[in-house]
Image (cartoon, rainbow, N blue to C red; front, top):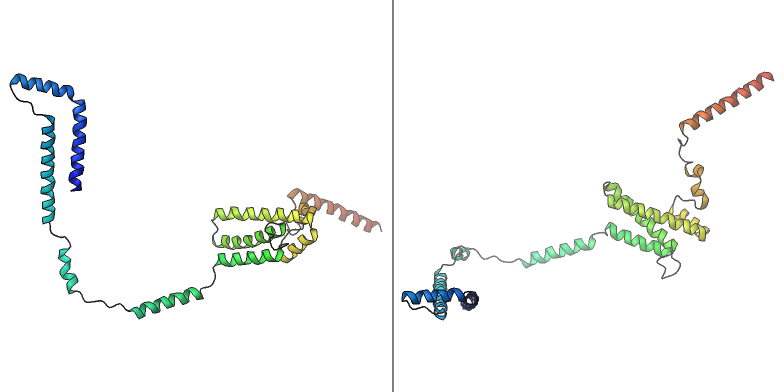
Amino acid sequence: MIRIILLAIFLISINAFTMRFSAQRSGMSKLKMMNEGETPVPESAKVDRALDSALDFLQDGEAEMEEEEDEFEMFSDIFADAPDFEINYDLISELEKKDMEKAVSKGPTAAQENAKEIQAQVERWRKHDKDVGSAEVQIAISNVRIKYLTAHLLANKKDQATKRGLIALVNLRRKSLKYLFKTNPSKAAEMVSELGLRYRGGDAALDKNVKYGAYKNTKSKWMKIRAAKKQETIDRAAAKEDALA
């Protein structure tokens, strides 16, 4: 019924637009029919005729749809002959119990352990209960996160985003340590010793001999040649003195 009403409204709107833009054409056709002796058909009669034909078409289509057979009727015999399935509620409760025990016995994830360690370090180094942004807290948090990301990068060497984040954290820890060495050197030395950081602070970080002292090959080729020649000159002078003596 709704489709019939919508189709009627659609046809009426089409007729209103056609009557507006075809006034001249209809006038010419009326004059032609009067000249030929025929009686012109009014526009309302054309609309009524179109509506009647649309109603007949829709009623015939609904009658044909009612006569169609159900496409799922062929499966009714199969489902009727199927055996009854009894639900084993005891088995379901047992599986649910096993899932709950597995979830309880499951250990914490790496992210949860990292968050727990961060909280422990913050409580260790903070100045007061509401301290979340001092240099000590920033160093402690950065150090824990650096360890976590380093372990991640050892297993995922092509994770470039994590590598950039790790570099940013290392720079943040270095700047915070440099600031702490200026403001509170004893606290900075305590953190370096307890956390195992490789930072000397002050001007020692800029001293090349201290910075590269742990490396063996720190001299260039020409520096090695000059040092060898200087040592050779010293040896000759010592040998000459021994000969004169």
